[in-house]
View (tube, rainbow, N blue to C red):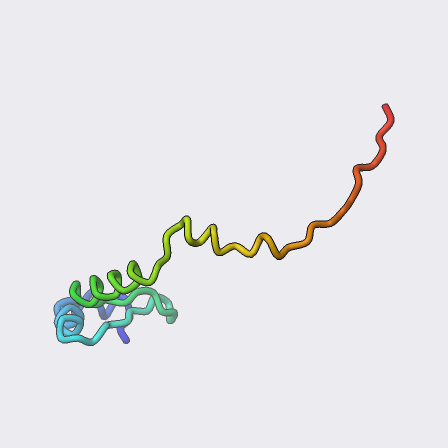
Length: 80
């Protein structure tokens, strides 16, 4: 794990480690901020995410709307 300052100072080492297959985590103010990984690994992860994602239409069709019972509230009387 690298701090932002160390990652700036040794960016070539961060990139080399990521290219070697080890994603490099960088922290900012002691909290995880970013991960540097190789372009090949990024595209592999992206491709897997796209394949696993359903279409928007499939997402809408999966909504369990038919199983929900609606409240039977009547409107109140309003006099002007």
